[in-house]
Image (cartoon, rainbow, N blue to C red):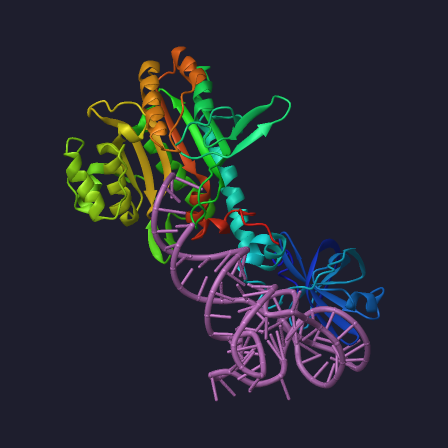
Length: 451
RNA sequence: GCGCCUCUAGCUCAAUUGGCAGAGCAUCGGACUCUUAAUCCGCAGGUUCCGGGUUCAAGUCCCGGGGGGCGUACCA
Protein backbone atom coordinates (compact mmCIF):
# COMPACT_ATOMS: atom_id res chain seq x y z
CA UNK A 1 0.00 0.00 0.00
CA UNK A 2 2.81 2.36 0.90
CA UNK A 3 4.18 1.91 -2.64
CA UNK A 4 0.83 2.42 -4.32
CA UNK A 5 0.17 5.68 -2.51
CA UNK A 6 3.71 7.02 -2.29
CA UNK A 7 2.67 10.13 -4.27
CA UNK A 8 0.12 11.19 -1.67
CA UNK A 9 1.22 14.37 0.12
CA UNK A 10 0.87 14.95 3.87
CA UNK A 11 -2.71 15.89 4.69
CA UNK A 12 -3.92 14.89 1.22
CA UNK A 13 -6.97 12.70 0.51
CA UNK A 14 -6.73 10.28 -2.38
CA UNK A 15 -10.35 10.15 -3.50
CA UNK A 16 -10.14 6.33 -3.53
CA UNK A 17 -11.88 4.07 -1.05
CA UNK A 18 -10.68 0.61 -0.03
CA UNK A 19 -12.09 -2.23 2.06
CA UNK A 20 -9.93 -4.35 4.27
CA UNK A 21 -10.11 -6.60 7.26
CA UNK A 22 -7.72 -7.54 9.99
CA UNK A 23 -6.91 -7.36 13.62
CA UNK A 24 -6.87 -4.16 15.68
CA UNK A 25 -3.39 -4.05 17.20
CA UNK A 26 -3.25 -0.56 18.72
CA UNK A 27 -5.67 2.30 19.28
CA UNK A 28 -4.99 5.95 20.12
CA UNK A 29 -8.11 7.86 21.08
CA UNK A 30 -7.91 11.61 20.69
CA UNK A 31 -11.29 12.98 21.77
CA UNK A 32 -13.31 13.52 18.64
CA UNK A 33 -10.89 11.48 16.52
CA UNK A 34 -9.11 8.20 16.98
CA UNK A 35 -6.28 6.29 15.36
CA UNK A 36 -5.84 2.55 15.17
CA UNK A 37 -3.37 0.07 13.70
CA UNK A 38 -4.95 -2.68 11.62
CA UNK A 39 -2.87 -5.77 10.90
CA UNK A 40 -3.57 -8.46 8.33
CA UNK A 41 -1.44 -11.20 6.80
CA UNK A 42 0.33 -8.70 4.58
CA UNK A 43 1.15 -5.95 7.05
CA UNK A 44 -0.19 -3.01 9.01
CA UNK A 45 -1.96 0.21 8.15
CA UNK A 46 -3.23 3.07 10.27
CA UNK A 47 -6.95 3.68 10.67
CA UNK A 48 -8.22 7.24 11.05
CA UNK A 49 -11.66 7.71 12.60
CA UNK A 50 -13.55 10.97 13.06
CA UNK A 51 -16.55 11.44 15.31
CA UNK A 52 -18.37 13.41 12.61
CA UNK A 53 -17.89 10.84 9.83
CA UNK A 54 -17.40 7.46 11.47
CA UNK A 55 -20.65 5.59 12.21
CA UNK A 56 -21.01 4.57 15.88
CA UNK A 57 -17.80 6.41 16.79
CA UNK A 58 -18.19 5.47 20.46
CA UNK A 59 -18.45 1.82 19.47
CA UNK A 60 -15.29 2.16 17.43
CA UNK A 61 -13.33 3.66 20.30
CA UNK A 62 -14.72 0.91 22.52
CA UNK A 63 -13.15 -1.86 20.45
CA UNK A 64 -10.70 -4.12 22.23
CA UNK A 65 -7.15 -4.61 21.12
CA UNK A 66 -7.15 -7.91 19.29
CA UNK A 67 -10.65 -7.56 17.85
CA UNK A 68 -11.06 -8.50 14.20
CA UNK A 69 -12.71 -5.73 12.20
CA UNK A 70 -13.62 -4.91 8.64
CA UNK A 71 -13.16 -1.33 7.47
CA UNK A 72 -14.14 0.61 4.37
CA UNK A 73 -12.95 4.13 3.71
CA UNK A 74 -10.89 6.60 1.79
CA UNK A 75 -7.11 6.34 1.60
CA UNK A 76 -5.43 9.49 2.90
CA UNK A 77 -2.24 10.70 4.43
CA UNK A 78 -2.46 12.43 7.80
CA UNK A 79 -0.89 15.79 8.48
CA UNK A 80 1.92 13.96 10.22
CA UNK A 81 2.53 11.91 7.08
CA UNK A 82 1.11 8.52 8.05
CA UNK A 83 -0.73 6.67 5.29
CA UNK A 84 -4.18 5.86 6.68
CA UNK A 85 -7.65 4.56 5.94
CA UNK A 86 -10.43 6.87 7.05
CA UNK A 87 -13.05 4.77 8.78
CA UNK A 88 -16.23 5.51 6.81
CA UNK A 89 -17.78 2.11 7.54
CA UNK A 90 -16.67 -0.55 9.97
CA UNK A 91 -17.88 -3.81 11.48
CA UNK A 92 -16.57 -5.97 14.26
CA UNK A 93 -15.97 -9.43 12.79
CA UNK A 94 -14.83 -11.17 15.95
CA UNK A 95 -14.30 -10.15 19.52
CA UNK A 96 -11.09 -10.72 21.47
CA UNK A 97 -12.53 -11.62 24.84
CA UNK A 98 -9.18 -12.29 26.42
CA UNK A 99 -6.84 -9.42 27.25
CA UNK A 100 -4.26 -8.42 24.72
CA UNK A 101 -0.66 -9.16 25.77
CA UNK A 102 1.55 -6.21 26.65
CA UNK A 103 1.49 -4.10 23.51
CA UNK A 104 5.17 -3.26 23.73
CA UNK A 105 6.71 -6.42 25.18
CA UNK A 106 4.27 -8.90 23.67
CA UNK A 107 4.72 -12.33 25.22
CA UNK A 108 8.14 -13.75 25.91
CA UNK A 109 7.38 -16.66 28.19
CA UNK A 110 8.32 -19.58 25.97
CA UNK A 111 5.86 -21.90 27.65
CA UNK A 112 2.97 -19.58 26.77
CA UNK A 113 4.39 -18.98 23.30
CA UNK A 114 4.45 -22.69 22.44
CA UNK A 115 1.18 -23.61 24.11
CA UNK A 116 -0.72 -20.61 22.78
CA UNK A 117 0.97 -20.31 19.41
CA UNK A 118 -2.12 -18.46 18.16
CA UNK A 119 -1.13 -15.57 20.41
CA UNK A 120 2.58 -15.82 19.63
CA UNK A 121 1.90 -15.66 15.91
CA UNK A 122 -0.08 -12.46 15.86
CA UNK A 123 1.94 -10.66 18.49
CA UNK A 124 5.49 -11.52 17.40
CA UNK A 125 6.36 -10.59 13.82
CA UNK A 126 9.55 -12.64 13.71
CA UNK A 127 7.61 -15.79 14.61
CA UNK A 128 5.23 -15.26 11.72
CA UNK A 129 8.20 -14.67 9.44
CA UNK A 130 9.95 -17.85 10.50
CA UNK A 131 6.92 -19.98 9.70
CA UNK A 132 6.36 -18.18 6.42
CA UNK A 133 9.95 -19.02 5.54
CA UNK A 134 9.39 -22.63 6.52
CA UNK A 135 6.46 -22.81 4.15
CA UNK A 136 8.51 -21.26 1.35
CA UNK A 137 11.31 -23.76 1.92
CA UNK A 138 8.86 -26.65 1.65
CA UNK A 139 7.27 -25.43 -1.56
CA UNK A 140 10.63 -24.46 -3.12
CA UNK A 141 11.91 -27.96 -2.31
CA UNK A 142 8.94 -29.56 -4.04
CA UNK A 143 9.32 -27.35 -7.09
CA UNK A 144 13.06 -27.98 -7.34
CA UNK A 145 12.64 -31.74 -7.15
CA UNK A 146 9.69 -31.83 -9.53
CA UNK A 147 11.72 -29.81 -12.04
CA UNK A 148 14.26 -32.65 -11.93
CA UNK A 149 11.74 -35.35 -12.64
CA UNK A 150 10.97 -36.45 -9.08
CA UNK A 151 7.47 -37.62 -8.26
CA UNK A 152 5.99 -36.82 -4.85
CA UNK A 153 4.26 -39.76 -3.18
CA UNK A 154 2.58 -40.58 0.12
CA UNK A 155 3.32 -43.84 1.86
CA UNK A 156 1.80 -45.30 5.03
CA UNK A 157 2.32 -43.73 8.43
CA UNK A 158 1.17 -46.96 10.10
CA UNK A 159 3.81 -49.65 9.74
CA UNK A 160 3.25 -53.25 10.78
CA UNK A 161 7.04 -53.51 10.98
CA UNK A 162 8.97 -50.35 11.89
CA UNK A 163 11.97 -49.97 9.63
CA UNK A 164 14.27 -47.76 7.62
CA UNK A 165 16.09 -46.26 10.57
CA UNK A 166 17.60 -47.17 13.91
CA UNK A 167 15.11 -45.74 16.39
CA UNK A 168 12.44 -46.66 18.91
CA UNK A 169 8.94 -46.36 17.48
CA UNK A 170 5.61 -45.31 18.96
CA UNK A 171 3.05 -48.09 19.06
CA UNK A 172 -0.66 -47.96 18.41
CA UNK A 173 -3.48 -50.39 17.80
CA UNK A 174 -6.13 -50.87 15.14
CA UNK A 175 -9.32 -52.15 16.74
CA UNK A 176 -11.16 -53.69 13.78
CA UNK A 177 -8.08 -55.61 12.65
CA UNK A 178 -6.99 -56.21 16.24
CA UNK A 179 -3.54 -55.29 15.02
CA UNK A 180 -0.61 -53.56 16.71
CA UNK A 181 0.89 -50.94 14.45
CA UNK A 182 3.86 -48.62 14.67
CA UNK A 183 4.06 -44.98 13.65
CA UNK A 184 6.76 -44.81 11.02
CA UNK A 185 10.31 -43.96 11.99
CA UNK A 186 11.21 -43.50 8.29
CA UNK A 187 9.46 -43.93 4.92
CA UNK A 188 12.58 -45.51 3.44
CA UNK A 189 11.53 -49.09 2.85
CA UNK A 190 8.22 -48.12 1.23
CA UNK A 191 9.90 -45.62 -1.08
CA UNK A 192 12.41 -48.23 -2.24
CA UNK A 193 9.52 -50.62 -2.91
CA UNK A 194 8.26 -47.91 -5.26
CA UNK A 195 11.62 -47.80 -7.00
CA UNK A 196 11.36 -51.57 -7.44
CA UNK A 197 7.99 -50.84 -9.03
CA UNK A 198 9.56 -48.53 -11.57
CA UNK A 199 9.21 -45.09 -9.99
CA UNK A 200 12.74 -44.09 -10.82
CA UNK A 201 12.72 -40.77 -9.00
CA UNK A 202 10.44 -40.46 -5.97
CA UNK A 203 10.32 -38.32 -2.88
CA UNK A 204 8.15 -37.90 0.17
CA UNK A 205 8.05 -35.10 2.69
CA UNK A 206 7.21 -37.38 5.55
CA UNK A 207 6.21 -36.71 9.12
CA UNK A 208 8.06 -39.35 11.10
CA UNK A 209 7.87 -40.30 14.76
CA UNK A 210 10.63 -41.43 17.08
CA UNK A 211 10.07 -42.31 20.69
CA UNK A 212 13.13 -40.58 22.09
CA UNK A 213 14.15 -37.62 24.17
CA UNK A 214 13.40 -33.97 23.46
CA UNK A 215 15.97 -31.25 23.02
CA UNK A 216 16.65 -28.07 21.10
CA UNK A 217 17.37 -30.34 18.13
CA UNK A 218 14.82 -33.11 18.64
CA UNK A 219 11.04 -33.22 18.55
CA UNK A 220 9.30 -36.62 18.76
CA UNK A 221 7.56 -35.93 15.46
CA UNK A 222 9.53 -34.22 12.75
CA UNK A 223 9.58 -33.79 9.02
CA UNK A 224 11.98 -35.69 6.83
CA UNK A 225 12.47 -35.38 3.12
CA UNK A 226 13.43 -38.70 1.63
CA UNK A 227 14.17 -39.26 -2.01
CA UNK A 228 15.37 -42.15 -4.17
CA UNK A 229 16.97 -41.85 -7.57
CA UNK A 230 17.57 -44.90 -9.76
CA UNK A 231 20.90 -45.25 -11.54
CA UNK A 232 22.52 -42.89 -9.03
CA UNK A 233 25.11 -43.46 -6.31
CA UNK A 234 26.08 -41.48 -3.23
CA UNK A 235 28.33 -39.16 -5.23
CA UNK A 236 25.32 -38.12 -7.31
CA UNK A 237 23.31 -37.57 -4.13
CA UNK A 238 26.03 -35.36 -2.65
CA UNK A 239 25.79 -33.10 -5.67
CA UNK A 240 22.02 -33.05 -5.36
CA UNK A 241 22.14 -32.05 -1.68
CA UNK A 242 24.64 -29.22 -2.05
CA UNK A 243 22.75 -27.84 -5.03
CA UNK A 244 19.36 -28.09 -3.32
CA UNK A 245 20.58 -26.37 -0.16
CA UNK A 246 22.35 -23.67 -2.13
CA UNK A 247 19.17 -23.08 -4.14
CA UNK A 248 16.98 -22.89 -1.03
CA UNK A 249 19.34 -20.44 0.67
CA UNK A 250 19.23 -18.12 -2.32
CA UNK A 251 15.47 -18.58 -2.66
CA UNK A 252 14.56 -17.70 0.94
CA UNK A 253 17.57 -15.73 2.22
CA UNK A 254 18.77 -14.21 -1.03
CA UNK A 255 22.32 -15.38 -0.31
CA UNK A 256 24.36 -18.43 0.63
CA UNK A 257 26.42 -16.43 3.14
CA UNK A 258 24.54 -16.69 6.42
CA UNK A 259 25.13 -15.99 10.05
CA UNK A 260 24.07 -18.75 12.39
CA UNK A 261 24.37 -18.72 16.18
CA UNK A 262 26.71 -15.74 15.87
CA UNK A 263 29.09 -17.39 13.40
CA UNK A 264 29.48 -17.03 9.64
CA UNK A 265 28.18 -19.94 7.60
CA UNK A 266 28.79 -20.37 3.87
CA UNK A 267 26.41 -22.80 2.17
CA UNK A 268 27.46 -22.48 -1.46
CA UNK A 269 28.34 -25.61 -3.42
CA UNK A 270 30.54 -27.56 -3.65
CA UNK A 271 30.85 -28.76 -0.08
CA UNK A 272 33.98 -30.33 1.35
CA UNK A 273 34.15 -34.13 1.07
CA UNK A 274 36.11 -36.15 3.60
CA UNK A 275 35.93 -39.68 4.86
CA UNK A 276 34.87 -40.32 8.43
CA UNK A 277 38.32 -41.74 9.21
CA UNK A 278 40.09 -38.69 7.77
CA UNK A 279 37.98 -36.34 9.87
CA UNK A 280 38.42 -38.45 12.97
CA UNK A 281 42.18 -38.15 12.55
CA UNK A 282 42.04 -34.47 11.65
CA UNK A 283 39.69 -33.23 14.38
CA UNK A 284 39.81 -35.95 16.99
CA UNK A 285 43.47 -36.79 16.60
CA UNK A 286 42.48 -40.44 16.52
CA UNK A 287 44.06 -42.69 13.91
CA UNK A 288 42.26 -46.00 13.81
CA UNK A 289 40.69 -48.41 11.33
CA UNK A 290 38.42 -51.43 11.40
CA UNK A 291 41.43 -53.69 12.07
CA UNK A 292 42.49 -51.69 15.13
CA UNK A 293 42.39 -54.09 18.10
CA UNK A 294 39.06 -53.84 19.93
CA UNK A 295 40.80 -53.32 23.25
CA UNK A 296 42.47 -50.21 21.86
CA UNK A 297 39.18 -48.83 20.58
CA UNK A 298 37.48 -49.56 23.89
CA UNK A 299 40.22 -47.70 25.72
CA UNK A 300 39.91 -44.69 23.41
CA UNK A 301 36.16 -44.65 24.08
CA UNK A 302 36.49 -44.96 27.82
CA UNK A 303 39.00 -42.11 27.90
CA UNK A 304 36.25 -39.99 26.39
CA UNK A 305 33.40 -41.15 28.63
CA UNK A 306 31.75 -43.14 25.86
CA UNK A 307 29.88 -46.11 27.26
CA UNK A 308 30.81 -49.34 25.50
CA UNK A 309 28.39 -52.25 25.27
CA UNK A 310 29.46 -55.86 24.93
CA UNK A 311 27.99 -56.24 21.47
CA UNK A 312 29.69 -53.15 20.06
CA UNK A 313 32.07 -54.04 17.26
CA UNK A 314 34.87 -51.89 15.87
CA UNK A 315 32.52 -50.11 13.46
CA UNK A 316 30.17 -49.01 16.23
CA UNK A 317 33.04 -47.83 18.40
CA UNK A 318 34.62 -45.84 15.56
CA UNK A 319 31.26 -44.18 14.89
CA UNK A 320 30.92 -43.32 18.58
CA UNK A 321 34.40 -41.80 18.63
CA UNK A 322 33.59 -39.73 15.56
CA UNK A 323 30.28 -38.48 16.97
CA UNK A 324 31.82 -37.56 20.30
CA UNK A 325 35.02 -35.89 19.14
CA UNK A 326 34.53 -34.74 15.58
CA UNK A 327 30.94 -34.02 14.56
CA UNK A 328 30.37 -31.06 16.92
CA UNK A 329 33.60 -29.46 15.63
CA UNK A 330 32.47 -29.42 11.99
CA UNK A 331 31.07 -25.97 11.18
CA UNK A 332 31.22 -25.33 7.46
CA UNK A 333 29.24 -27.80 5.35
CA UNK A 334 31.02 -31.11 4.87
CA UNK A 335 30.03 -34.50 3.54
CA UNK A 336 31.29 -37.13 5.95
CA UNK A 337 31.79 -40.17 3.73
CA UNK A 338 32.10 -43.91 4.21
CA UNK A 339 30.63 -45.43 7.34
CA UNK A 340 31.25 -48.83 8.92
CA UNK A 341 28.97 -51.54 7.52
CA UNK A 342 28.15 -52.56 11.08
CA UNK A 343 26.16 -49.35 11.72
CA UNK A 344 24.57 -49.07 8.28
CA UNK A 345 22.26 -52.02 7.61
CA UNK A 346 20.66 -50.58 4.46
CA UNK A 347 23.74 -49.22 2.66
CA UNK A 348 25.61 -50.88 -0.18
CA UNK A 349 29.11 -52.27 0.40
CA UNK A 350 31.82 -49.81 -0.53
CA UNK A 351 33.19 -50.50 -4.00
CA UNK A 352 36.81 -50.27 -2.75
CA UNK A 353 36.94 -50.73 1.03
CA UNK A 354 35.72 -53.99 2.59
CA UNK A 355 33.84 -53.52 5.83
CA UNK A 356 32.71 -50.03 4.83
CA UNK A 357 29.63 -48.79 3.02
CA UNK A 358 28.92 -45.98 0.58
CA UNK A 359 27.13 -43.72 3.00
CA UNK A 360 27.52 -40.06 3.88
CA UNK A 361 26.09 -37.55 6.30
CA UNK A 362 25.94 -33.83 5.55
CA UNK A 363 27.10 -31.89 8.60
CA UNK A 364 26.39 -28.17 8.80
CA UNK A 365 27.10 -26.05 11.87
CA UNK A 366 27.89 -29.19 13.86
CA UNK A 367 24.50 -30.64 13.11
CA UNK A 368 23.56 -33.63 11.04
CA UNK A 369 21.37 -32.28 8.26
CA UNK A 370 21.18 -35.33 6.02
CA UNK A 371 21.99 -39.01 5.81
CA UNK A 372 22.33 -40.74 2.47
CA UNK A 373 23.78 -43.74 0.75
CA UNK A 374 24.13 -45.90 -2.26
CA UNK A 375 21.30 -48.30 -1.53
CA UNK A 376 21.88 -51.94 -0.77
CA UNK A 377 20.09 -53.82 -3.56
CA UNK A 378 21.23 -57.42 -2.99
CA UNK A 379 18.44 -59.37 -1.20
CA UNK A 380 20.82 -62.00 0.17
CA UNK A 381 23.14 -59.39 1.66
CA UNK A 382 20.12 -57.49 2.98
CA UNK A 383 18.86 -60.62 4.73
CA UNK A 384 22.30 -61.08 6.23
CA UNK A 385 22.27 -57.47 7.51
CA UNK A 386 18.75 -57.86 8.95
CA UNK A 387 19.85 -60.99 10.77
CA UNK A 388 22.75 -59.09 12.32
CA UNK A 389 20.20 -56.54 13.53
CA UNK A 390 18.12 -59.30 15.08
CA UNK A 391 21.18 -60.44 17.00
CA UNK A 392 21.71 -56.87 18.22
CA UNK A 393 18.07 -56.60 19.21
CA UNK A 394 18.24 -59.81 21.19
CA UNK A 395 21.34 -58.42 22.90
CA UNK A 396 19.21 -55.52 24.13
CA UNK A 397 19.55 -52.87 21.40
CA UNK A 398 16.02 -51.43 21.36
CA UNK A 399 16.72 -49.46 18.22
CA UNK A 400 17.81 -52.40 16.13
CA UNK A 401 15.77 -53.42 13.11
CA UNK A 402 13.71 -56.52 12.62
CA UNK A 403 13.41 -58.63 9.48
CA UNK A 404 10.97 -57.24 6.91
CA UNK A 405 10.17 -60.23 4.69
CA UNK A 406 8.07 -58.24 2.25
CA UNK A 407 10.90 -55.78 1.74
CA UNK A 408 13.25 -58.68 1.00
CA UNK A 409 10.69 -60.07 -1.44
CA UNK A 410 10.61 -56.68 -3.17
CA UNK A 411 14.40 -56.70 -3.48
CA UNK A 412 14.16 -60.16 -5.04
CA UNK A 413 12.18 -58.58 -7.87
CA UNK A 414 15.11 -56.26 -8.45
CA UNK A 415 15.97 -52.83 -7.07
CA UNK A 416 18.04 -50.97 -9.65
CA UNK A 417 21.23 -49.26 -8.50
CA UNK A 418 19.80 -46.40 -6.47
CA UNK A 419 20.95 -43.43 -4.46
CA UNK A 420 18.82 -42.48 -1.46
CA UNK A 421 18.66 -39.46 0.81
CA UNK A 422 17.02 -38.27 3.99
CA UNK A 423 17.08 -34.60 5.01
CA UNK A 424 15.84 -33.40 8.39
CA UNK A 425 13.75 -30.51 7.10
CA UNK A 426 13.23 -28.98 10.54
CA UNK A 427 16.99 -28.66 10.97
CA UNK A 428 17.39 -27.23 7.51
CA UNK A 429 14.70 -24.66 8.33
CA UNK A 430 16.55 -23.86 11.56
CA UNK A 431 19.70 -23.07 9.59
CA UNK A 432 17.90 -20.91 7.05
CA UNK A 433 15.88 -18.99 9.65
CA UNK A 434 18.69 -18.61 12.17
CA UNK A 435 16.77 -20.57 14.81
CA UNK A 436 18.77 -22.38 17.46
CA UNK A 437 15.82 -24.36 18.81
CA UNK A 438 13.73 -26.79 16.78
CA UNK A 439 10.70 -25.49 18.67
CA UNK A 440 11.06 -22.19 16.89
CA UNK A 441 10.36 -23.90 13.56
CA UNK A 442 7.61 -26.32 14.64
CA UNK A 443 4.24 -24.63 15.13
CA UNK A 444 3.06 -26.91 17.92
CA UNK A 445 6.06 -28.66 19.46
CA UNK A 446 5.46 -31.63 21.73
CA UNK A 447 4.94 -30.49 25.35
CA UNK A 448 3.54 -31.99 28.47
CA UNK A 449 -0.17 -31.25 28.72
CA UNK A 450 -1.19 -28.31 30.86
CA UNK A 451 -2.71 -29.30 34.17
C1' G B 1 16.74 -40.36 32.84
C1' C B 2 20.33 -37.05 35.52
C1' G B 3 22.30 -31.90 36.77
C1' C B 4 21.59 -26.57 37.00
C1' C B 5 18.15 -22.45 36.53
C1' U B 6 13.19 -20.60 36.62
C1' C B 7 7.64 -19.81 37.94
C1' U B 8 4.53 -12.93 41.46
C1' A B 9 -2.23 -9.39 38.30
C1' G B 10 -4.48 -10.99 31.35
C1' C B 11 0.90 -9.34 29.50
C1' U B 12 6.02 -7.32 30.87
C1' C B 13 8.39 -6.97 35.42
C1' A B 14 9.50 -4.96 40.91
C1' A B 15 9.32 -6.26 46.23
C1' U B 16 16.09 -4.41 50.92
C1' U B 17 18.18 -8.87 56.12
C1' G B 18 12.30 -13.05 56.58
C1' G B 19 8.46 -7.46 58.21
C1' C B 20 1.49 -4.29 55.28
C1' A B 21 2.31 -7.94 47.69
C1' G B 22 3.64 -3.10 43.91
C1' A B 23 4.40 -0.52 38.88
C1' G B 24 3.68 -0.01 33.51
C1' C B 25 0.57 -1.86 29.65
C1' A B 26 -4.31 -4.24 28.82
C1' U B 27 -9.54 -4.13 30.99
C1' C B 28 -13.44 -0.67 33.23
C1' G B 29 -15.01 4.95 34.09
C1' G B 30 -13.68 10.05 32.67
C1' A B 31 -10.82 14.28 29.63
C1' C B 32 -8.73 15.37 24.86
C1' U B 33 -9.70 17.17 16.69
C1' C B 34 -3.25 14.58 13.80
C1' U B 35 -1.74 10.28 17.11
C1' U B 36 2.61 6.62 16.29
C1' A B 37 4.07 2.01 22.79
C1' A B 38 -0.35 8.96 22.22
C1' U B 39 -1.04 11.68 26.84
C1' C B 40 -3.66 12.96 31.50
C1' C B 41 -7.17 11.70 35.86
C1' G B 42 -9.68 7.69 38.36
C1' C B 43 -11.67 2.49 39.56
C1' A B 44 -10.83 -2.46 39.77
C1' G B 45 -7.61 -6.45 39.27
C1' G B 46 -3.69 -11.69 43.50
C1' U B 47 -4.51 -19.49 45.89
C1' U B 48 3.00 -15.10 44.69
C1' C B 49 2.68 -22.86 40.33
C1' C B 50 0.72 -26.80 44.17
C1' G B 51 1.26 -29.28 49.12
C1' G B 52 3.74 -29.51 53.69
C1' G B 53 7.40 -27.41 57.35
C1' U B 54 10.43 -23.65 60.27
C1' U B 55 9.04 -18.76 62.37
C1' C B 56 5.67 -13.83 66.24
C1' A B 57 5.84 -13.17 60.79
C1' A B 58 7.35 -16.68 54.39
C1' G B 59 6.84 -14.20 47.50
C1' U B 60 11.61 -14.66 50.22
C1' C B 61 14.26 -20.05 54.20
C1' C B 62 13.68 -25.86 54.28
C1' C B 63 11.29 -30.59 52.27
C1' G B 64 8.12 -32.90 48.56
C1' G B 65 5.43 -32.42 43.93
C1' G B 66 4.18 -29.87 39.03
C1' G B 67 5.20 -26.73 34.48
C1' G B 68 9.04 -24.60 31.55
C1' G B 69 14.21 -23.48 29.96
C1' C B 70 19.34 -24.85 29.37
C1' G B 71 23.09 -28.64 29.64
C1' U B 72 23.89 -33.94 29.40
C1' A B 73 22.40 -39.01 27.72
C1' C B 74 19.69 -41.48 23.41
C1' C B 75 18.91 -39.79 18.32
C1' A B 76 17.86 -36.90 12.87
